[in-house]
Length: 314
Image (tube, rainbow, N blue to C red; front, side, top):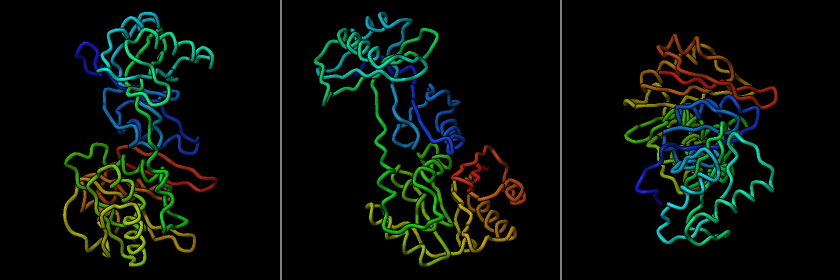
């Protein structure tokens, strides 16, 4: 699809999250898209597949912008659909409209577009929105396919493992731009972060000192048709140099690792990678600084009375 040969002038993203994950959502969006989250939407010059994020709902590639819906309709006449069918949907981004008004605007705009409307299986899904202050935008709309949802049904689970949503966001924080980046998860457990990273095309390997955890990780990766990228190893024995790392500091209800062991783990991650995302059940900034890291950003994810601190370091 094109409008007189132009490329998108920007990308409009909508998102949703539970209040317990609001900080993580905002952190992921500004890391991936370089823009601050607003009230359910944001606009960015960065092109990111909406299915990468567990929080993004849809993306509109802005090809047309106007000061009114009528003016937007005039621009929509010039859209070239290459003979394909289309469907027009209202995207909630800044301006509220009642359900009946949304459908009326969809019909009004759809009537201006040259081509065949198809409400069930259109070749092109077109999204339009009013972003506030009278600015209207229109362009191809891509929905999030929520591929991470099926990953919660893996054969091996830990009660203290990250949820698939949090794991996917953590992978994005560690590697916002995957091209040419090598990553490592040296305490990978059952592979929750590995699964999300690999499913997004991130080049990542994992290791864990626990042979049972590695066995579970291999089974989980195989279950989703992902490659075996894990091995049994203590983090101190892992060699090489990576662009990014994820460290989910080991935790269970029976034993919490000592500050000395946490510092050892952090020091080894500093040795292995330029950038790291650290996940901990308590603030870890001081120890990260002692390990040689500088903290770039952080957030807290809550689940009832339980909290996880997520810190981006370099």
